Image (cartoon, rainbow, N blue to C red; front, top):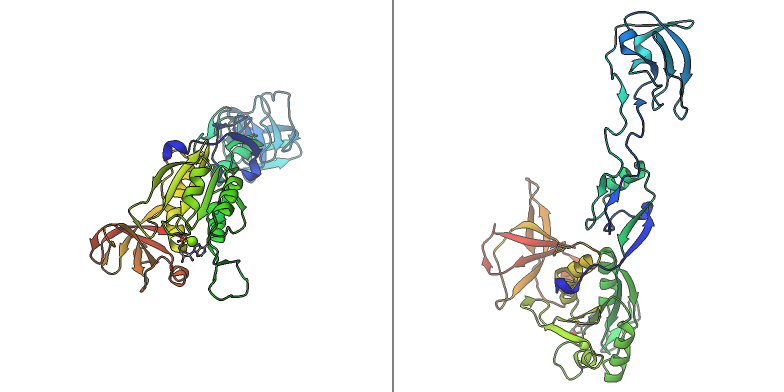
Length: 381
Ligand code: AMP
Ligand code: MG
């Protein structure tokens, strides 16, 4: 699956929008930092060797100005924080350490060469990599790049994710209840989770359980980089998704995983479009998204090793995997006195229990029968 989720093409975007995006190329400094030798203090630019005797103030250079004439023996130039050091000067005498009478300047004590000077390139050299290709651009890298004269960066394009739900029983979010029908939540869930994973989302209308409608809808959805379809991937008489995908030329890569909830997961592709058929039960959809879809979306965005975002936790109570499958238990995940996550599974577990999901912080992943205190992977929502 990983090999099919190769990074998408690159685009150039403004630095202001770059935080969290994956760099498609190394982002390098356009300048030396500092760009020139500059003063760290308000005071006087001096020749350190001359500071044991009275000096003469010959002018002033403020931040943003340039003093281009070299200062001579015994000369000093008033300087503000951030101003470029005049040629010939090699130290700053701070205002606090100076006495001035007319144009005569005295140092309270001689200063050493380099005092309060910020040297060109001491932080970053022009061409240094501030954000490496293949890694998310951090907020601090954005700060560094802004200082480094960079206004645009090349990032991997966001995947366009189509979200589709099948089921004649499905009502729109917020619609009045109707007999025999249930409110649909999977499209909203997937929209939010996919956006959080960096995707651009196209939400498609609900597809009734009918062969032709399913085929037509799938053909529409295949225009995206990734198509997520929920429901209808099992073997019931009204499950039309698999045959419709086959008819559309989507090649099956796998069907069914050893996972609870989420067993009927289907994965395939047509050309560069990846297609996930997610089981309709809401918790199955969330579990399959976090374990399979999210890593794929992050790989498409250029993170080569993206994997499920497991965090370590301990079980508060014994827990066991159900029928030999990796089992995701909706759990409260709280920090103990040492700051470690402790997972307490919700009282009821089931792929349809959206109330339990709402009351949880995420999932504890259990592979076998485990005692209280056992180390588990957790997935935070
Ligand atoms: P299916 O995978 O189509 O067999 O659906 C399994 C269960 O999930 C059924 O009880 C459906 O009513 C329910 N379901 C299917 N799609 C959704 C959805 N989009 N939102 C909420 N529940 C759904
Ligand atoms: Mg269905």
